Length: 196
Ligand SMILES: [Ca+2]
Ligand SMILES: [Ca+2]
Ligand SMILES: [Ca+2]
Image (cartoon, rainbow, N blue to C red; front, side, top):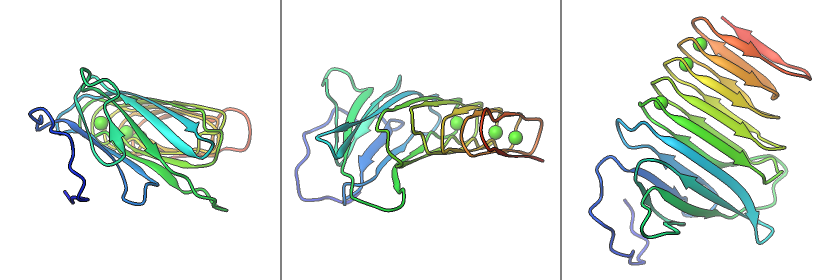
């Protein structure tokens, strides 16, 4: 890991399997990487603070290791972190969150109340995963990976089930079941559904 020269507070004995959460050096993107073998139960909220910065609150059942731009709001709770991402004016949406929930059976619940077209990217990896994303503007890109996944996403989203018997419910733009027996439901509006 790169050091930015700022001494971090001494952390408790790190767990080898703790999920890692950090903001990029330019402050614009949050990455979450689950620890190996974890069955995460992530609850993520995404809100504007100060008009332009996005505050993420990430709560899990497993310990999280906060890196750059992140901290435990309650020092006694190692499973909860808050992170702040700065935004810049842009004509096109760009990614503010890249989440990799790894190989376990994971649950990810996202509440995005930014009401802005920033992109959240979710890679759920192997395992039978469940992702539910809410918000007036969602614009998530979800990849279910191997396993039987249940994906529920909102407006302006792209959801791919990948391998496995996946269930995708979307009010977004694209749902792709990928291989195996999938159930797709597009909701109102123009849907591009592909099942092979
Ligand atoms: Ca997984
Ligand atoms: Ca799948
Ligand atoms: Ca599939």
